[in-house]
Amino acid sequence: MDLVNSIAEMSMTMSAMKTQQSVEIAVMKKTMDVSTEMVSDLLDAMSVPTFPGENGSLLNVRA
Image 1 (cartoon, rainbow, N blue to C red):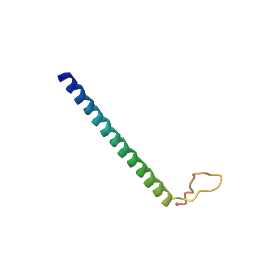
Image 2: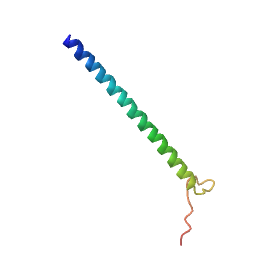
Image 3: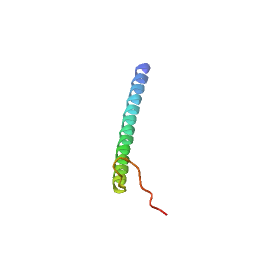
Image 4: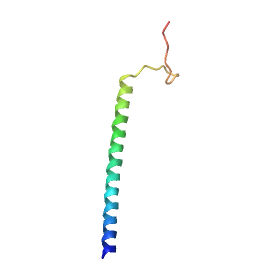
């Protein structure tokens, strides 16, 4: 009977660990999604005009 109890306890512990890992992954994924959205919004707010044919280049007008 002791072996059965230890197997059951081990199974419950592994199940709890799997649940905890799933929650941690979900939280990390949500954090990454929110961070990506914030960075995207920030880049949109800071958008600098580009010139046709010069994709991504900026014109430096400082003296």
